[in-house]
Length: 197
Image 1 (spheres, rainbow, N blue to C red):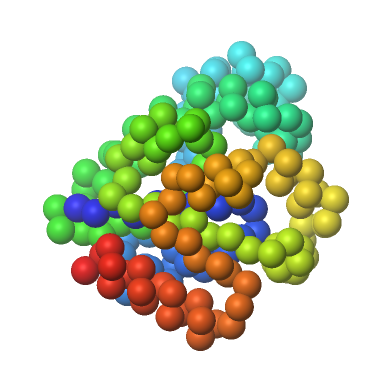
Image 2 (image 1 turned 90 degrees about the vertical axis):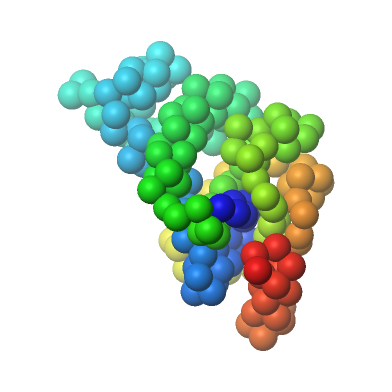
């Protein structure tokens, strides 16, 4: 099994890239969606409650809007949450991967918060390859508008995510998602031929 991680900040176009790999035959996972499933587990809710009472309502359900506000308040908060919750997400990802054939090619979309190397990241340390998707701010803003994300909210979220230099430091491949569809498809084909065949 080959596991390829597609990383990058908000509105860089990771989902488009991941789904393009899926069209070529890869099995596609989105860690954000897995995290939503994990955050419904009672033991995980209890951990979240220890981090912040404000995000868990009286009936034991996580208030997703309050959680977003909490997560994007500052980097220290974000990192503390990641350290607590990522092991549960990794466990669920591994469980789902175990159901696949050994010759599967897997693409995992991951916003990512790293240390100084891939070995320090709970997900990337197991990656066969890492693809960083980057984009110009104006393109991020345009994508954000289509998703209903206002400019101030986009930049507010961006400030707690890794810097471009941090993403680039752990990547094997870079996709500059700020050109034509044809150029994007050509770059995806190049990476697929290099690491997935």
